[in-house]
Length: 146
Image (cartoon, rainbow, N blue to C red; front, side, top):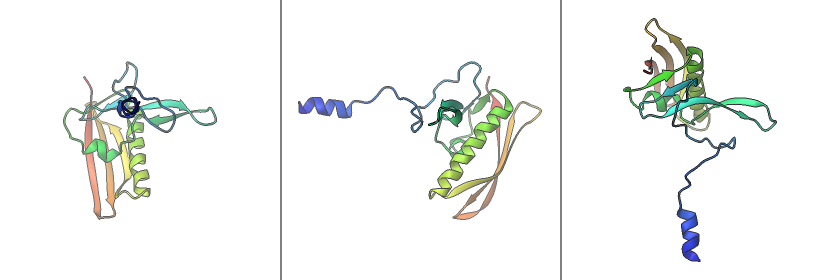
Protein backbone atom coordinates (compact mmCIF):
# COMPACT_ATOMS: atom_id res chain seq x y z
CA UNK A 1 0.00 0.00 0.00
CA UNK A 2 2.79 2.39 0.92
CA UNK A 3 4.60 1.67 -2.37
CA UNK A 4 1.40 2.46 -4.29
CA UNK A 5 1.15 5.80 -2.50
CA UNK A 6 4.79 6.60 -3.31
CA UNK A 7 4.23 5.63 -6.95
CA UNK A 8 1.27 7.97 -7.19
CA UNK A 9 3.06 10.86 -5.51
CA UNK A 10 6.30 10.57 -7.48
CA UNK A 11 4.91 9.63 -10.90
CA UNK A 12 5.46 12.53 -13.31
CA UNK A 13 2.34 13.94 -14.91
CA UNK A 14 2.63 13.72 -18.67
CA UNK A 15 -0.11 16.20 -19.46
CA UNK A 16 -1.14 19.59 -18.24
CA UNK A 17 -4.29 21.59 -18.61
CA UNK A 18 -4.81 25.33 -18.96
CA UNK A 19 -7.22 26.14 -16.16
CA UNK A 20 -6.74 29.91 -16.23
CA UNK A 21 -4.18 29.80 -13.42
CA UNK A 22 -1.49 27.49 -14.79
CA UNK A 23 0.05 27.68 -18.22
CA UNK A 24 0.85 24.63 -20.30
CA UNK A 25 4.10 25.18 -22.23
CA UNK A 26 3.62 25.41 -25.99
CA UNK A 27 6.08 23.37 -28.03
CA UNK A 28 4.81 23.88 -31.58
CA UNK A 29 3.92 26.93 -33.63
CA UNK A 30 0.91 25.71 -35.61
CA UNK A 31 0.27 26.86 -39.16
CA UNK A 32 -1.43 30.24 -39.11
CA UNK A 33 -0.27 31.06 -35.58
CA UNK A 34 1.87 34.03 -34.62
CA UNK A 35 4.80 32.87 -32.51
CA UNK A 36 8.10 33.96 -31.10
CA UNK A 37 10.68 31.21 -30.95
CA UNK A 38 13.37 31.80 -28.33
CA UNK A 39 17.01 30.73 -28.47
CA UNK A 40 16.20 27.78 -26.21
CA UNK A 41 13.46 26.61 -28.58
CA UNK A 42 10.65 27.91 -26.39
CA UNK A 43 7.57 28.79 -28.45
CA UNK A 44 5.71 31.83 -27.18
CA UNK A 45 2.33 32.81 -28.55
CA UNK A 46 -0.91 34.41 -27.49
CA UNK A 47 -3.67 32.03 -26.51
CA UNK A 48 -7.36 32.71 -26.04
CA UNK A 49 -9.23 31.37 -23.07
CA UNK A 50 -12.51 32.17 -21.31
CA UNK A 51 -12.22 34.28 -18.16
CA UNK A 52 -14.26 33.65 -15.02
CA UNK A 53 -17.29 35.36 -16.56
CA UNK A 54 -17.08 33.39 -19.80
CA UNK A 55 -15.67 36.22 -21.94
CA UNK A 56 -12.77 35.35 -24.21
CA UNK A 57 -9.49 36.99 -23.28
CA UNK A 58 -5.88 36.67 -24.45
CA UNK A 59 -2.74 35.80 -22.52
CA UNK A 60 0.74 34.57 -23.33
CA UNK A 61 1.60 30.89 -23.42
CA UNK A 62 4.40 31.55 -20.90
CA UNK A 63 5.11 33.33 -17.65
CA UNK A 64 8.54 34.34 -18.97
CA UNK A 65 9.61 37.97 -18.91
CA UNK A 66 11.15 40.01 -21.70
CA UNK A 67 14.58 39.67 -20.06
CA UNK A 68 14.17 35.89 -20.02
CA UNK A 69 13.74 35.91 -23.79
CA UNK A 70 16.27 38.61 -24.66
CA UNK A 71 19.10 37.34 -22.49
CA UNK A 72 18.52 33.60 -23.05
CA UNK A 73 20.89 33.83 -26.01
CA UNK A 74 21.01 35.66 -29.28
CA UNK A 75 21.34 32.73 -31.65
CA UNK A 76 18.52 30.95 -33.49
CA UNK A 77 15.61 33.04 -32.29
CA UNK A 78 12.97 34.14 -34.76
CA UNK A 79 9.30 34.96 -35.25
CA UNK A 80 6.37 33.76 -37.32
CA UNK A 81 3.35 35.88 -38.18
CA UNK A 82 2.24 39.48 -38.53
CA UNK A 83 4.43 42.20 -37.05
CA UNK A 84 1.70 43.75 -34.88
CA UNK A 85 0.89 40.35 -33.37
CA UNK A 86 4.56 39.59 -32.65
CA UNK A 87 4.90 43.06 -31.10
CA UNK A 88 1.89 42.25 -28.90
CA UNK A 89 3.81 39.19 -27.66
CA UNK A 90 6.79 41.41 -26.78
CA UNK A 91 4.45 43.81 -24.97
CA UNK A 92 3.05 40.90 -22.98
CA UNK A 93 6.56 39.77 -22.04
CA UNK A 94 7.34 43.34 -20.88
CA UNK A 95 4.11 43.36 -18.83
CA UNK A 96 5.21 40.09 -17.19
CA UNK A 97 8.54 41.67 -16.29
CA UNK A 98 6.88 44.76 -14.85
CA UNK A 99 4.50 42.58 -12.83
CA UNK A 100 7.50 40.72 -11.38
CA UNK A 101 9.03 44.10 -10.48
CA UNK A 102 5.88 45.01 -8.56
CA UNK A 103 6.22 41.70 -6.70
CA UNK A 104 9.83 42.30 -5.66
CA UNK A 105 11.79 41.70 -8.88
CA UNK A 106 14.71 43.99 -9.68
CA UNK A 107 14.10 45.08 -13.30
CA UNK A 108 11.30 46.71 -15.22
CA UNK A 109 10.79 47.71 -18.83
CA UNK A 110 10.10 51.25 -20.05
CA UNK A 111 9.69 52.85 -23.48
CA UNK A 112 9.20 49.63 -25.47
CA UNK A 113 9.08 50.11 -29.23
CA UNK A 114 8.69 47.38 -31.80
CA UNK A 115 8.80 47.83 -35.57
CA UNK A 116 9.56 45.98 -38.77
CA UNK A 117 12.56 47.14 -40.78
CA UNK A 118 13.02 46.88 -44.54
CA UNK A 119 14.68 43.45 -44.27
CA UNK A 120 11.80 41.68 -42.46
CA UNK A 121 13.57 41.94 -39.09
CA UNK A 122 11.63 43.08 -36.05
CA UNK A 123 13.58 45.78 -34.25
CA UNK A 124 12.90 45.92 -30.53
CA UNK A 125 14.05 48.84 -28.39
CA UNK A 126 13.40 49.45 -24.71
CA UNK A 127 14.95 50.71 -21.51
CA UNK A 128 15.62 48.39 -18.59
CA UNK A 129 15.53 50.13 -15.24
CA UNK A 130 16.66 48.48 -12.07
CA UNK A 131 16.59 49.18 -8.38
CA UNK A 132 20.24 48.12 -8.37
CA UNK A 133 21.76 50.29 -11.11
CA UNK A 134 21.31 52.87 -13.83
CA UNK A 135 18.93 52.48 -16.79
CA UNK A 136 20.19 50.50 -19.78
CA UNK A 137 18.97 51.01 -23.35
CA UNK A 138 18.55 47.72 -25.20
CA UNK A 139 18.17 47.13 -28.94
CA UNK A 140 17.50 43.63 -30.27
CA UNK A 141 16.58 42.22 -33.68
CA UNK A 142 14.49 39.17 -34.45
CA UNK A 143 14.46 37.55 -37.90
CA UNK A 144 11.50 35.90 -39.57
CA UNK A 145 11.73 32.11 -39.17
CA UNK A 146 12.56 30.21 -42.33
